[in-house]
Image (cartoon, rainbow, N blue to C red):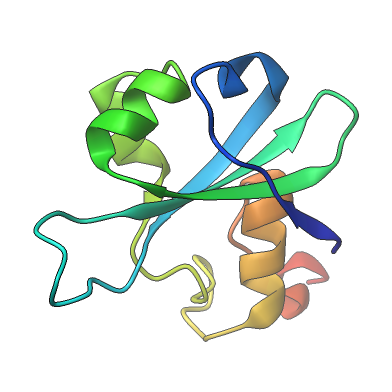
Length: 108
């Protein structure tokens, strides 16, 4: 999977075809609020990550509802939803397609 970083400016939502998932950034002691990474696919099918945004900034810049934020938030992004095992391929598919399924479960 080729992943590129894109700065999430106020016009970022126009580039987004599919917001695949949101993950938490490890909270730093000097930060008062939680920050997030946003994984998304552009209209030309390239996978991107944007980061350094708090919840309100994610909702505002990606033009999503609080409910969609909650639905896209993944707390265990490396754990396959089917077998419960940790897997890099589960995360790769999550970032690329929005499906958190490992290679073994996909091929069963």
